[in-house]
Image 1 (cartoon, rainbow, N blue to C red):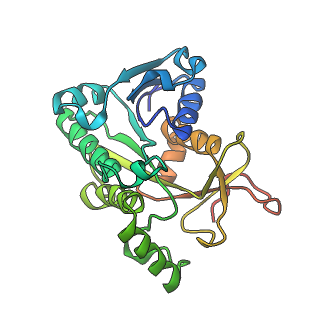
Image 2: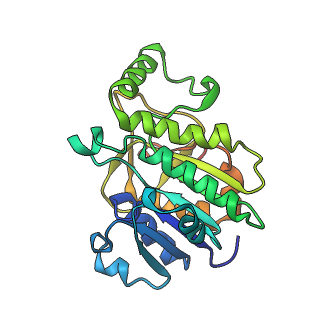
Length: 253
């Protein structure tokens, strides 16, 4: 990764996306943020050196336009999600995130980068690893999640977006590498010590907590730190705030 990577950011006006912009620009990265309205970004962020704001609807961009935005990027970070309102949950497009991931995948392949582009997908702990690897989730929780996906588009979309990466890209694609980041209950607040885990940590009915600033910090580390990327490439880490009895920041369980 170059000393000053170029990052395409999707969903930059959301609460998590703003934190990613903050962390990336503080580290000197160049950020291209595709947003529907730049006015939704705080003025302080809009003035950050290295930030280019592109006003557009991602799904409305033509293939050539999206390829142009992807061209020259070292990484893509998606913080896209559904607004928690009736329209945001049940309105179109119900597969926003999955469509976006597939379109970026196709754009990267069309551009044909000299080295793999890093794709960081922010999602949630409702997303399962393939092959039943999340063994902590018992039969009741698995059934509950299945019902949520059947009834609510956002959980179904989140799983479908992750499926695009590990089913159609895989672990050894020469043009695109990925990490799916799974935070637990999102909180406002400053960055604090956090831990990273291969699998699930808490029950859906007794969730852990993850501050949005910590998500931004981890996303920035994945983009800018080669060792961090090598550790989590092709994986789906769960990120949670460090609990008081835990001693080591960034521990791996």
